Length: 142
Image (cartoon, rainbow, N blue to C red; front, side):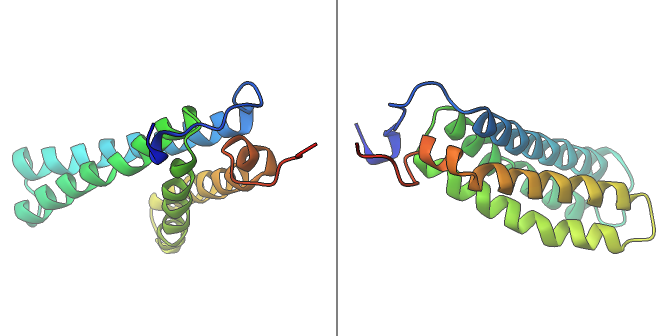
């Protein structure tokens, strides 16, 4: 068994907090796929200012969606490595949410939602119950 495949689930079932964090990470990944798909379709069939930029942006978003989706699956399988990519994704989502909140448009609710998801996911992943289930935090050795 490789180091990336090690599960440390000797304490029983997966904590609810970890399942919720995986669901939120997967939700972000699916949102990236949807946004990327929209940009891609708009670039190919619509009339954007720059079709090349729309297609490139769409493909980039779809490729970037793989990180939170794969990491969410890893969290569900209690893979220790999955926590890092999800944490990084949430930290990177916070400045994006801030920029959306600065807009004077319909992007503000999106910024609120993104910030709420990112902060909630960070709190769920940094919870001691979640870290211990992944084999990261301290355990009783009694």
